[in-house]
Length: 150
Image (cartoon, rainbow, N blue to C red; front, side, top):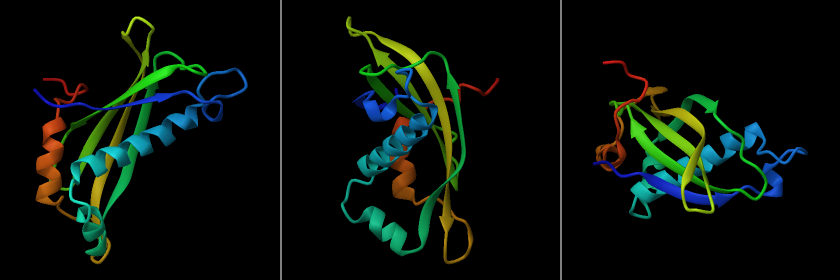
């Protein structure tokens, strides 16, 4: 069974529009923050990420999509959950779901997102193979692609 990376957060005044719902662009911002926290969690040695960047390997977002099921409102407690799918040589997709944490402790799905990341060699100006240490650690969070039809 795969792991799920999870972060708790609350919808703040800075997240909400005048109607009190979480503004759509804030979902993108939170996805970026969760992506970074996930990468920091799997790059466990303090110098792994800076060393990767120093050699010219960067991680670029090449696609993003979101499907809204229900709105998040000001002061809602959210659980943001991340899994990995389509782990390839040069790219990976992150499935990041937003849940409302209800008073009973149950989670209600609000939004599903999908982000494709590609590894890019800035020295060569082209996509490059994902470092093995990143691939092996990300694989612990891999799930089947929910959009893939068998």
